[in-house]
Image (cartoon, rainbow, N blue to C red; front, side, top):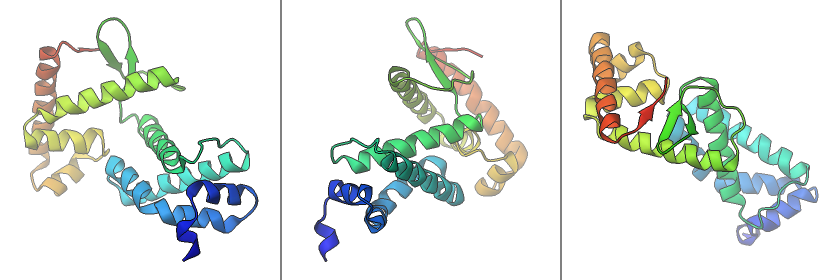
Length: 194
């Protein structure tokens, strides 16, 4: 089949020249990878679908404005857009800490930070991955509740149903998770600002 051997770069070029079908081919070619990436961050099918749609609305807008210049790196470019939209979603819903860097240690605060420049974005991604690593050190039951609450935006009622424990047990696990996380943070000399 001919379209299988057309490169992404050629399809982008064809779309910019007005061949609408080229975009469908690109979406079809990469849908699974992009959707799976988004879903792995949000764990919600409807939300992942919404972010996927928004990603391609942004892709179309950028291509139509003639602002695409990724030299054939179409998939990584789309993944970056998807990643930024996931971050925007968490930021809007105040479910993800906003990161700042000052002094010797990485500091994360819950202050709203609108436009992050590239350097801040790298710092933020680094600190976020550090925090996720710290969460990995928690006991499994506490980690599970913390991730469901903080990253998946689930209520304690939903957590209780998903894990098969009472709401009080879920609340208790969350409390211990935060206490233990604080201990791990102190052990690693990370300063958390409120």
